[in-house]
Length: 351
Image 1 (cartoon, rainbow, N blue to C red):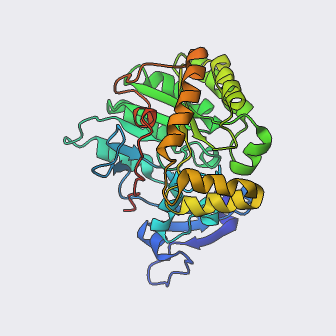
Image 2: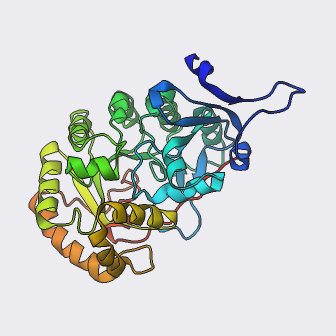
Image 3: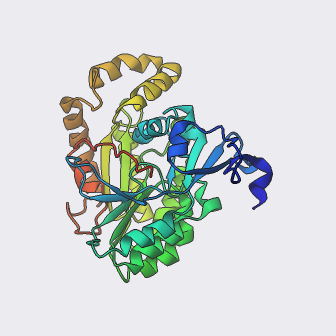
C-alpha cells in the first residue's frame, strides 16, 4: 500500500515493544496502525480490526431500528453541529478537532459482518448505516468498505437503510439496485441548506448542495425512492420561510420522494462546539439560542411547534409529504424525526 511511507504506528513484531502513540481507547479498539497521507492533509487514519460490526441499539433509544453499522468513527464532513461528536470520547479522543481529523477505520468490518449475519440467531432485522458517522464521507473512496457491507447484508436477506451526505454513494448505486431486488433498501440523503457560503462554514468537508441534489436525481434514475433528511434546521440561520421554501422546491425538483425536517439538537459536547462557532461567527444570535435551548439539548417545544407549522404547508406545497411509515425499508430516523423525538446517541462497539 502506497501509504506505508506515511506510517505512524504499526503492530509490533513478536518480542518487540510497541511504538504506537495511540491513546488507550484506540488500543482497546484493536489498533493495527496509524497513517497520514498528502491526499488527506491534516488527517490521521487509525486502522483497526474490530471484533463486532453490528451495534445493538441501547434499550430505550427512541429510534425505529435495532441494529446499526458504523464502518468508521469520526467524519471528514466536519459538520459543526454533528450530534455524533460525543462518540469520539469513547475512544479517548476529543469531540471537537479530533472528530474531524482522527478517523478510525474498521478494516475488517465486512468480513466480521458476514460472520455475524451467518449466525442462526440472526433474525434479519433492519440495519441502519449513517446513524453516528457518515458511511460515505471522503475516506470511503480510499477504503471502499461499503461494497462489502452492502453485499453481506443483501446476501443474508437483511433489510438496510443508508443516510448520507456523501456523493460517493453514486459509485455504489448499481450494487444497491441489485441489493434492492433481494431485500428492502432505503436511501436517505441529508441536505438542509442551499446557502453555499454558510455551508462552507457549518459543514466544510461535505459535498455542495448542488452535488447532493444531483445525487438525489441519480438515486431516482437508478429506480429507487430517495428520502431526504433536511436536518438540522438552524434557528435564525436556515429557518426563514424563504429559505425553507427554496430548499423544499429544490428537493422536489431533484426528484426527492419525501422529506423529514427537524431542528438542531445540541447534545453533549456538540453544544459547546456549535455555540463556540456561533459566538465567533454570529455573536448576535447567542441570546436567541439561549432562549430556544436554555440549558437543554433540544429546542423548546414552542419553537418546535412554530417551526413545524411553518414547514408543513411548504412540504405539502412541493409534494414531499410521504406516508408516515413505509415498512421495514423505511429510513431509520424518519419516524422518530417526524415527531421531533430525541434520538439517543448510540455508544459505539469497540471490540
